[in-house]
Length: 118
Image (cartoon, rainbow, N blue to C red; front, top):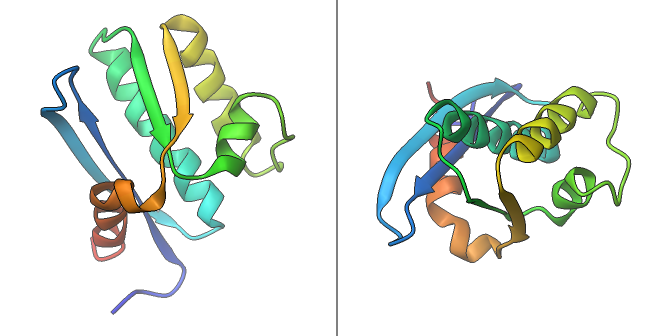
């Protein structure tokens, strides 16, 4: 059963051979789906930066969040700081961002759902 006003951010980090390096599931307060997606992106890219990983390929299943990160859409006030942090970290490292379909993002989605129970 999903708790009211709870959401989750989940993601995975893989190496160039597609092997799992790290997975995460963090509970968050529910604002919007875009907030959860952006927060998950920030957690993943922050972990990679802390581990001095370079040449990062970030995949998100939200074109809205991707467009915010790429400066194609203006973020809402609630997302502004998260988007700014992601952009700052992207400039520090060699990061590319691309869209993946929700069907291929099943593990991250499952982790996000699991986070609502933590």
